[in-house]
Image (cartoon, rainbow, N blue to C red; front, side, top):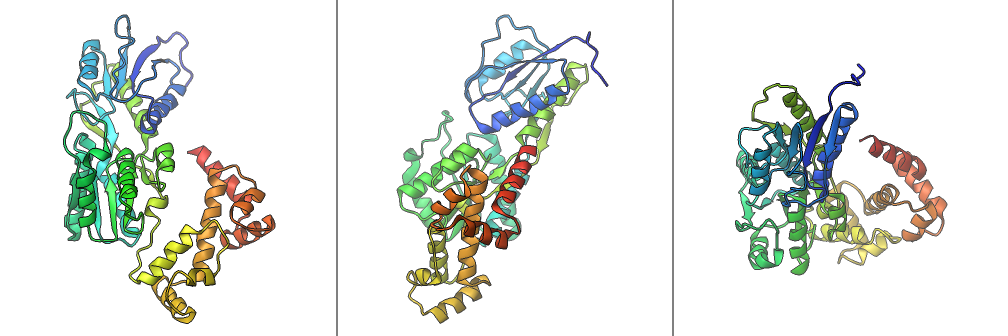
Length: 394
């Protein structure tokens, strides 16, 4: 149905930061809603998290607000506006209004399930009680561990008034906790910034990641995850759906409908695996060392003889133990890891096939195409086009 050109515009303020990927996902979802509801006009300014935007309060006359209400100042400002409001924060500083947030139980189940899929049996939680959603993820984690009969291995950062995390202030306590954990261990860190700083502590104290400590975060902030050392695995939230649902609820409220002040949960999309959980737990220490060697040298030509130099075993015994542990040969593992490396370069860079071949230490680019199609059923060009077409539809 075409919109009535005489229909009065609905003026909506967005008090949502533009400084992080999760919040920008919410804004994209709201934008999706406005594209099919052209009667909406939107007011948004650039600001960071925990920075209340008061630029419009003096003379603004509007119909509704979607806000991340995470400070008392923002809560007071929203209440003064006295218009229909939907909250997209878990802080719950303005009770009684509808709020749209992540499904923290589903997030925790995905994160823990991923760590179990890596073969890990020791699972821990690293939380920040400053945030409600971290506390709810901790509760879900404890419930899962109790159900499975596993110990509840939990570290919580000290309660503080400042939202900033300063890993160096608690590095001794965190190091002591990490050293006390049974190894190898997988840790679900409550969100990406916290996980990044956990990785920094591991790097600072030479704790191997992912061999001893595998880490998964939450939010899949691409820039943060890719700049982490090593790159960070993360649960992918559906923040776009969060924004769309918040806009839908607000539209109903602005039309006079009473919407109860309950939580509307949005489930995550999945897990984006990166190096921080790129581990397959193996009981045989020599096989584990060989797998780590293969992954560390994925960008250069490798042979089984190269790998043998990293373990004190004869080739016959090594290959037998490798096959028994992983149900594949060392050569198959080399090909698998290098194929995955080519996948990463095709998807995440604009490198040509010749440039990829040079990066991988392969003399002839045609060989990259031949072995990649043999392993995946697609040429590198077909894979890149298909992967990027899928990403653009998301």
